[in-house]
Amino acid sequence: MKKNVLIIGAGGVANVVAHKCAQHNDLLGHICIASRTQSKCDAIIESVHRKNNLKDKGNRFYSQQIDAMDIPTTVKLIKETDSAIVINVGIAFINMSVLQACLETGAAYLDTAIHEEPDKICENPPWYANYEWKHLEACKEKGLTAILGAGFDPGVVNAYCAYAVKHYFDEVDSIDIMDVNAGDHGKYFATNFDPEINFREFTGKVWTWIDRQWVSKPVHSEKKNYHFPVVGEQTIYLTGHDELHSLSKNIDANSIRFWMGFSDHYINCFTVLKNIGLLSEQPVTTAEGLEVVPLKVVKACLPDPASLAPGYTGKTCIGNLVKGKKDGKAPEIFIYNICDHKKCYEEVESQAISYTAGVPAAAAAILIANGGWDVKQMVNVEELVPDPFINLLNDMGLTTKIEKT
Image (cartoon, rainbow, N blue to C red; front, side, top):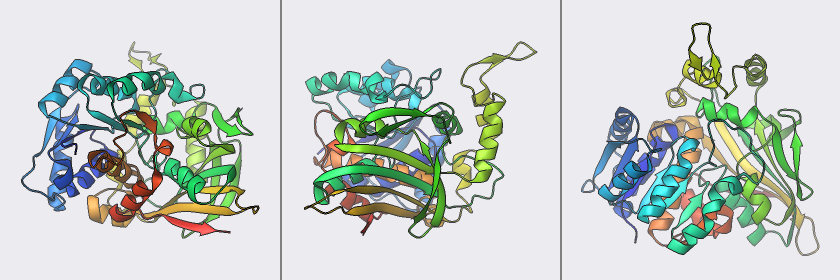
């Protein structure tokens, strides 16, 4: 069994990962949280103790300061903490650096999002081939377990695809991944995860997988209404997203699309910011001679997503609508999760968006630790056996439900 975990990052998702790993530290051993700002790590540790979520008080639960872009420093920290598993929940710009440090130390690698470069957005598909998949052979040669995109979307929705193929279909025609947040945080305008990453997803073109080929569409150009369980009818927009870039390769389906719910207010604010250039990732120079990146300025002006958790009400619904053939019939299933913002805060002092991303990462770490997912190579979640993952998530606070027609 692999022991000791290093969590890199100190945002809302890292908070959830830390709480959930602490709840299972009898299996995961010592836990270190590391970030550029150590005080944020310490605040997470205080939260875990405040909620009494540290199961084995005999194992260390501590923080370190680190710049994860610095590979030698990250290598040193992995060795000093004797970490067998590294959970990367920092900003997506550090993925390649952390992965390289794991390759040098042999520690298993986990992340929750595709790698990004600060000066690029919406890269050509399949995006994983631009960065992560270039290290497939290196991981295999070293016997290194690297699980990519082990959040909810990407992550759980990838497992839902594999589960549907395994249990419900002989052939899959279409998969529509749908993510809606019917919650209310009471702020005029805010994003539920890192604003910089959030806006970068939607400022370029939409890449989607239709009729077994990549199709490019303008952002927010296609929408529809769908009636979801519990949260009711919601407006969803066709967007590009991480998981499409691996599912198109690993799941035999004619079309795989990703839809996200946006309110009219979000669309209006986003459109104004985008049209006046404030969502650009490219630097500009002010009249005073200061070089700034507009997107980073907007990020600095918006609420920290972690600050939204107190008082957040309502629920999220994320799931896959899968259509295909089985035994000569044409079944349709919706496999999904409902998550409650208030209950998440009561348990781990987080809102549901962070909770749905963080719990799966902790669950994947547990499956690596107990050997179930310690596959000694680089994989995306849909390439793994989905059943133990979904069953473990049921026990850890993210229940999966299935509606069949």
